Structure formats: C-alpha cells, structure tokens
Image (cartoon, rainbow, N blue to C red):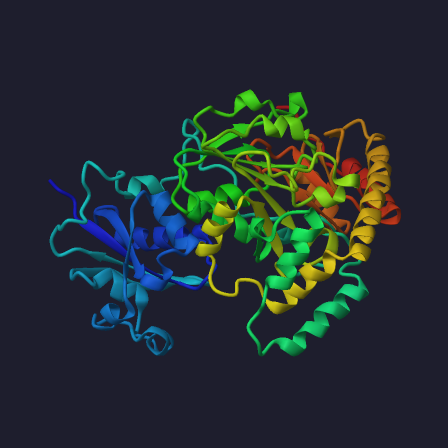
Length: 503
C-alpha cells in the first residue's frame, strides 16, 4: 500500500541553523505519528528557499525544497494566522500556507522554535512531486529513532563554536581564539568615525584597493566578505562541485556550509599519530573542491606551502583558510599572494588579530573569474561601512607592524604555555604549534573542562571537530599572568577528578 505524501511547510528568520529547523520538524512529525506518511518536500517562501538552515534541513531529510511567492501563499487560508507574518508577507502563516498550498489535510498546525515555524500536511492526492525512484529516499519516522550501538551516529555538531563556551558567563576565555585587549583604541576611533556616513550605502572600493595593495594583487582578485564564514557559504553555493572534500580536523563551518547547500561532503581525517600532518595523496583524485586550514584550527599545525601546492590541479578548487596566518611571524607558508597556483582560493579574516568578531569582516583572494562567481552570489552591499573602514585601516603600514608585533608575542606566550603544560604527565600537546592556540589530549578531558569552568576558565571542547573526540581540548594562547593562573587551575582540576572504581 502506498504511503501518504507529507509536505512540511517552513518559515524561518535569516540565519536560522539547520539543526534548529530539523529539530522542529522532527518534533512536528512525532506529533503526526508513525503512520502519517513520508515527507516528500519542504515548502517555504521563495525569499527563504536559499536559506542555509532550510536547505541544510532538507538535505539531511533527503528531500527537495519547493518555494512559493508571497502572493501565492497569501491566497491559502490558514487556521492559525498571526499578525506579524501577515504584515510582512501577506499570509498569516508561512508554514501553514506552504504546507497547504497544493491542498490536503493539515496534520500538525504551526509549531514554533526560536527562529523558525513549521507545519505538516498530508497531500490530498499524489502528484508529480511525490517520491520516485529518481529521488532520494523519503524521510520516515524510522529515521528519527536514536542510533543503536551498531549504528554510526550523525557525527559531531558542526555548528558548535567556542563562543558557546563563554556566552553570558564570567569566565576567563581560553575557548575563543580572538586576541585579548582588542580592538586597539586607534582602530576603535576609525570605526567610530565611519558612523557619520551610515546614511549612505557602503562603498567597498577603497577597502578593496587597500587589501589588494597589502598583498600585491590586482583588485579584481579581491572579494570583501562579512567574515570568513560568509565566504564559505558563497563557495558552497556559487562554485560548481561534484565531490567536495574537507580535510579534518579543522574549522567546521566549511563542511557545514557545503552540507547546507545540499552537497555530499567527503572527509580526509588527519591522524594524531602523524602529528595531524597532511599527506596530499590522502585526498581523493576525483575531489574537485578541497578545503584545508593553514595554520589549522584546532590542531595549530602549519602545513608547508609546497605540500598544499601538491593538492592543486586544473579542474579542482583548492580553498585554503588562512584566518590565523597573521598570527604566524612572517606569515611563512602563506599562499595568499600567489597567482600561479591553479584553482587557488585563499580566505583571510580580520576577526582574530584585531578583535572584530562582532563586526564581521574578511576577504577572499582568488582568480578574477572565481571572484566574479562569488560576488554574484552576494547580496547588494554585503559589508557594512564600519567593517569597510576597519578593513582599510588594518591594511595600513602601522597596522601591519602592530600585527607583526602581536604575532611575535604569540610565539613567546605560546612557549610559556607549552612549557607549563609539559609539567603535567597526563597532558599530551600537539607540537610544533604555530597558531594562537594549542590542542591537547588527556583522559577524561570533558570532566577536566567542567572542573576548569568551576574554577573560572573556559576551554574549547574538541569532540565537535571531526577526527577528534572527548579526550581533546583546545586552549587559546594568552599572556603569561593568565597562563599561570590557568596552569594552577588545571593542576587543581586534575587533582579533583573523582576516582573511578573498578567493578
């Protein structure tokens, strides 16, 4: 007997995470019951059809996204209208209208999360959007069952980041790799001065010229972005790829963005016994997009430029995330100024050295054709005037001198941290470390992390990085005084571990 086709209508705010959308959908499907039918599509407003959270949830369910104009949704009567969506898009509920636009029976009315709504409807009769042999298998209630001990889980939480370890808490922050005491006063003043021009639309040309000049590149090879995170989304959406591969452990946003765009992502997992060093032969030959960090977050490994060059070839896009390269003295092994490496795309961020995480500013360096593709996927005026002012200021000679001095201080402060960690026989550190953070391994690291929190320190958990597990922690490099206080807290935490009984 053919099971009924279910349509899930979804409404969402911009920036909603796929995990939130998926969690809301699963709760609604649980209400519908295991015999309700199979999900065949997510339906939403056309202006939300490319939202990564919705696209990502659809990809995880194995169903397509279908979109409708606001006018089409406004014609659909909904049982639970609200004033806010009616004022914004002329329908009382995007979720209910999208679920019912083709007719049918509403099984689960509008349900809400913090940033999304969803509703579930059973189609009145099958149509050309019903499941077929050419479509991914529909999502069923069986897929909602928790994994058994014989079933591989969905894997690490790719959307977990270090700021979650400290948000709203009075803790000394070793979880986020932003330099402390930033932004400097002179940069604050430059940003503040830009506020007088907020009535005008942003003009990115001066900042683009400044970035190009700093790296000795033509301007057409530069694209300004709202942080490196936006660049990963643009790459996932705009660049053609059939087999993307991400080298892990590394920053998880590249894979999250690719998956949200509907791509099936391959992983190359570097091994701790190899010092997390990259062997280019480990990357599949048919990978047409490869993402690698240098120096890599969270391992702090700096891959030789010559090794990374071996990954480049015609027909492949090589994305190198150099967000932490300015914390390396002399930026040795950098590829950002290279124009002779085929398919090379380098990402840079001003977040870490200059303390601009809240401003969102970064840039892409690539061949002009790639820059054009990425730029066409951006909205108009993607970078704000204050962020553009910051980018221009951070390219000036005095800023480059200050950044170089900061990189030298990282070396000294990191050496002090490593020397202190070497006193603990329980701790293994990944060395040599090249970034403004170190990765360490110890038994019961998750328990140690909680004990550190009780003593006022936040460390970054490692189990959300593919290729790592619960025995890993990442620590940001801080000044000598902060490090000494942390080492004392670590000593007390290790002593405070409850003994495990053997039974």
